[in-house]
Image (cartoon, rainbow, N blue to C red):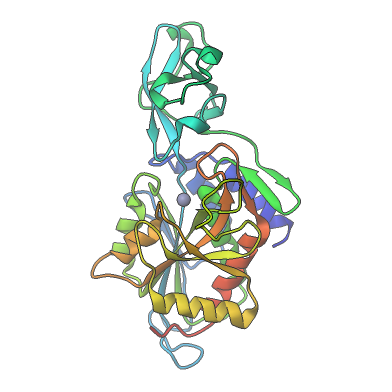
Length: 349
Ligand SMILES: [Zn+2]
């Protein structure tokens, strides 16, 4: 991918979009995919559903190798983890509840930003006096620089996200929202690459909502689309940082990770075999991911209706769910290349 993908990723990672509050990121993505797809709509849960038709007929047309075209659902979640205000005290300190998997360890001193642009720093009760204690969210607060309640123009229920500008350093990219804006960037870039190609399959590019609170947007969008196969595009932790779990054989920069199992699903074996065959035929670097925690939109898509063959392609990321996640652009490039190769082939399961 060239520099316009860096620009795209920067734009996507810097847009606001805590789970349930995805308006800003959705409008940014909608702008980016205009002209690349045949249909686009927003459903009741806020999912952005785009269809790039394949072949000649509206549905299930003959494919490139005489195989019927399939309905392929690709899902990347727009939402990011965040903090929701639960109480504002007389000094203007804001207590908060987590929206998604926010870790106390990752919070103290982090900068956050609300949808209206207000920024704050996460403070810890006791400050440095409490530095040896394990920080928990109930002993933390958002400090927006106020000295009294009247200074704060925010309300209970307002949401904030970790905030830091995107940074690119060689092949590595840094941003708090890489989970899953890098997956959104892969999906937008895929639509760009498909623009000049003839493929048999209908591609439903779905930018989902509320993944971080239980893959809710994928659940309803998969029901409506009723795809033949489904692939989630997300991040996965790596096993290559000091003292991380050696059972996780995923490395930054060694290619896209193909999900074999996580806590929520066992990927469809035949679908994975097709992806491996496409990767090997085109020389796309890939890794096999067996993750013993977490899950993705693929779980909900797999369980939709009477069941859908599903898997996930992950961009390896260090420091997932912290304010400074790292990905390697080459792994994102590999994800795009693998999806192109997969979609150019018949999908016979
Ligand atoms: Zn994610």
